[in-house]
Image (cartoon, rainbow, N blue to C red; front, side):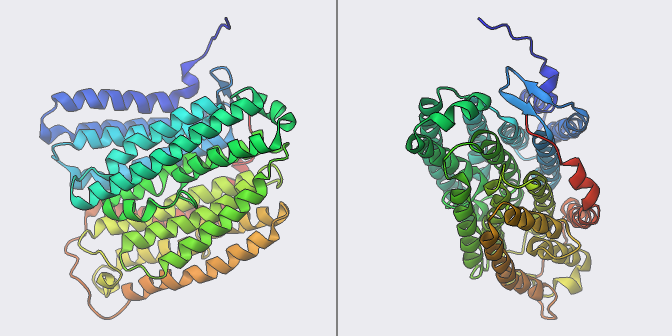
Length: 468
């Protein structure tokens, strides 16, 4: 029997979030409805403390090597907890004195905790547990409003998640049979001598499950319906936070486990990358509902984010490119959804006509975020796209960079359609008074997206480092 002398402080951000969720669940049972906001305040405190803990944590491995603390984990922790903080800010005003306010905050923290565990998982069994922890609370959040649209969103999300979750578990079983282990260091040694067909079958199944969490082809079917049917803060969360954990897990799998095998990981991920960005852009062309447009936009963004995953272990700066793009995308996407949250009465692109005349600040934030999603300088996504394009070329996939460049130009069509409606002199729906917290969040996210783009050099230097 192996003696384990593990330090729980190695997982301090995760411990803080888990403790906050448990305490919040207990508090919610005793606090009066008017004071349920204290559970949200506790969650915000846990996220803030977790960001500080992640920033000062030393690198290493925890719990017999099952969890890695390295630059990928650290950056993912900060972005996941920061994104959860933003969603808490967007959720608090509309949820104030809601009968299930504390439940919402607890579910949000548990889903974020699953994303954190995905980011650092270095064992297939921990990966499976993290997948379930990130998924089950998300299903409940999607249907939290209990209306017809929310119920449909939750059902579709659950059905696709259950199917691809079974595929993930099947793939883990197959990889265990091929590599005779679940720990990544042991799999890296055993898989090169395993039957290629067996290993490839396991990898495809695991990849399908993780792409469900990321929202990419072929696991993207839930995205438009779940995003359109859920509340705007939930949609912001679903299209941002789980992706970060999923992409960290995908990158770690490619760089640590499969780099020395004959499994065609790079080619497979490159094809899925091209499919995701192309399908997402084509579907977004015809959308009028703004949440559905942003949903297909996030499918296309998955395609760009898969580019450094495809060249994991083949390009020197693939890791920095992925992590920087994730941070830039999180800020920009949350900023766009913050504008949607600030104006809950506007649902379609045409409803935003004349917004620049009525609320120029919100219109400016929306324009910055939409142009940022295209990849317009000096936003963070612009620098992120340059990095992932360079990584793809450096890794031998110049054709993928060309496909991505064409898709970037094509995406201008639907983003500019929304921008043109916003700055139009015509009047659309009267939005009413914008929600203050969401408006401030939108301004902050847009500004931070620009600041991160301008400060890209020092940030990229911090993201360098080797995986555990």
